[in-house]
Image (tube, rainbow, N blue to C red; front, side, top):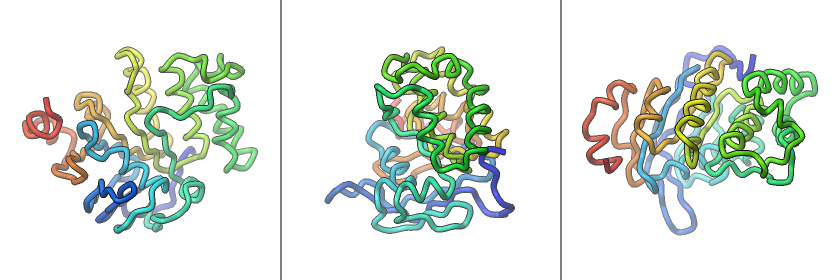
Length: 244
């Protein structure tokens, strides 16, 4: 099963007191959150609130200055990104970061390099069933795909690492509403395969549509947290933290 995790009563992902930034600039100020096993959690916030920095720090692309990050109880803060991926954490970056001249198949192969060949083939077949349009585009360069298809490639590449937790950084950016709904519908299936998800979104409606729990980040601090229902009914989210 994709993302199958050992029995563990604790959360899939735990972030405690995370402080991180770029150069002399501190962006995250003591961020703490948890993502449960087979749960979808969303981090909501306006542009520049710290969502991308948070996901990059969890993925090992930024070294935290303070705090702890645990994946199923295993401390991963400070590890190199490939070791974080090997531990079971996948990352779909903002902007997708595909290689325009490489084909869809090439991207899947890149993602699967950490897996044994039999597992790699199993994941590939499952993902092509999940994203049937990619099966028709395997030999097509990623740079010639539509925005929605590119987002699917980025997600499939991350899932080819066989993650137990998947980080998704604003997957709706730049996509038409109909395509966004298609992508989110597919993402909702991930928990069926044992994958927990931490989603960063600027859109309140989209972010809460598939989440169990939500965290609102503002100027690098978690200012509200609760179930998706609780957050959706809290006027402070709309009026203050999302600027709407």
